[in-house]
Length: 166
Image 1: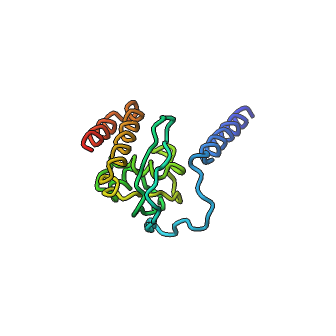
Image 2 (image 1 turned 90 degrees about the vertical axis):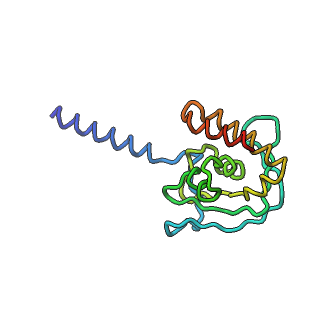
Image 3 (image 1 turned 135 degrees about the vertical axis):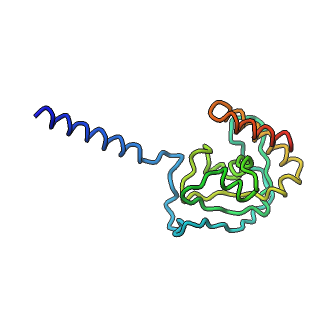
């Protein structure tokens, strides 16, 4: 009898654990639109917002500026990471903070992107050609590097190296 009760309690705890672990948090909720990708290939559509500043991701007092002319919209698919997306779009995985800057309303944490999220992929060259945008990107990458230092020191070093080359 005690063995049956113990097994039932153990199974209940395991089920409760997996039920709680599978609930999405606020930052990783998937948009409820019916435009989620049906295939494994991600959809990219050109977007033509005007050149405009974006809002800062942190509580820093300086304004973040980003050129959004020629930006694309990208829908996240299963298995995507910001580094993979950055590598495919910019040929350098360390440019993922640029995607975070442009998609701040969606991406709060680099590790929490989920299928169905729609990200803005800015035109890298347009931003590097604009001195204000380049400086803003450099500051933001250094900020992300300092936040990444404890969990991923090698990534932080790569981000610092990229920022110093801008």
